[in-house]
Image 1 (cartoon, helix red, strand yellow):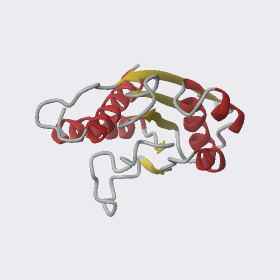
Image 2 (cartoon, one colour):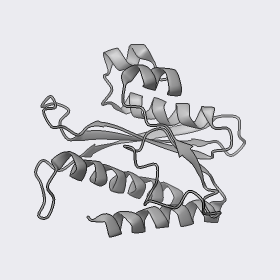
Image 3 (cartoon, helix red, strand yellow):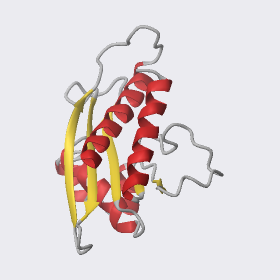
Image 4 (cartoon, one colour):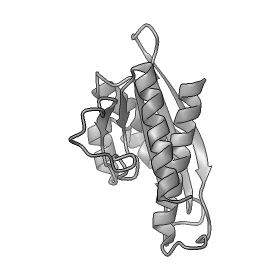
Amino acid sequence: MNQVELDQRAKQTAELLAKREWRLVCGELYGRFDLGHPDPHRRDLNWLCGSAIVYRLETKAEWLGVSREKLNSAGPVSSIIAEQMATGALLKTHEADVAISITGDLGPQAPAETDGVAWVGIATRTSDGTGYQVNSEKLELAKELVSGETNLRQQRQSEAVYRSLGILIDYLNA
């Protein structure tokens, strides 16, 4: 997977959101809130509400309403945290219809049990607008560099964003 493929997936995501007339908010997308580096001055970005970049645990709790108890008990690399991040972003962004989040441990020097593990959360408003639905999915990211890559952390970051957008595309197509 390269930058061109990531940009294509971001474009596909944007097209599906526009087709549904939905708006997306990111409750962390590994700093890739740009979704393929769109120009922020373009007028066709009305599908993207924005993104919270929340690396620190306290910031996850303060900005997105993630439970401090769950951060301590389940840990930040868990399905419940991914779900709470997506839900928090959705609930705080009233104009958004769907939210996506990633939480994971990209390494290096990560604990063996979480090294290369990420969780994706997707939250959507119910059709009647009175509630929300949330799902999460675990990603096992590459353990070694692929040919042409020089930094495992950056490779995993791109892989996680690419695969997360794929999950969102599948959801939007369902």
